[in-house]
Length: 296
Image (cartoon, rainbow, N blue to C red; front, side, top):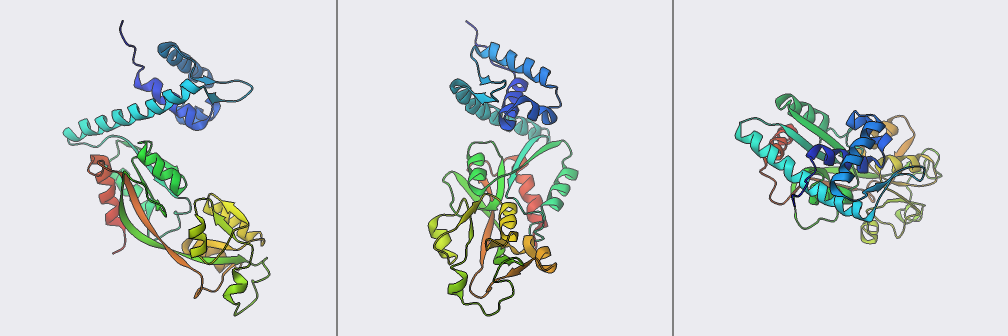
């Protein structure tokens, strides 16, 4: 009996729907109507002979077999993309998909000019389709390990086996309060007073990392710098932000740095690549473009 292997397009539609958690949300990326997506998903389920997902009034969800199939589909598509890049490299051209992950709030970092890097890379390699994902440090590393991303740029407090980290630069962070906070107009504030304030921490920080920054606990937790900025601006919390991200708020008087001699740290940024993939043509060319753009 012949084995039926779904075509790559059906697998890409399936993984896109899962990524967006529904047909309607996947429409824009796929450039397909919901009825067309539904037709393709039915074709895929007919080919594999199992129900992969539930859809309807209860919302979108994968079945247990759909979960397993999704993981295998991601692996297979990663291999297909890698082979396409290899074949293009033999012809002396770069094409295919490049999946890049970054931390949020990097767009204002002049020491890491990602818009310039991406612009230069796209001009040099116009046939490459770029996918840009913004995730937390932990999610970025898991995605690179699982071949859902080709590489990721960020600060990774806890590093994972199986990844190679290429050092980029160090991002300065300071402790901030807003003009609504009781400490905003105070001067010469003792460090022990500051460390007793309600503080917003990062979801990916361990208790050890929190203590390293001078705090025993946090009263709020966020997954993104934007979330952290919102809570600090509320006046209910103090918290750390990248200097480049907070500077415009300092300039307009809505934020101030608290005790820079006592609080502050530098986050080492790296490019994370799965071990064994650093010399793949697309990965290598992007690394070269990134290296050229970094300040000496």
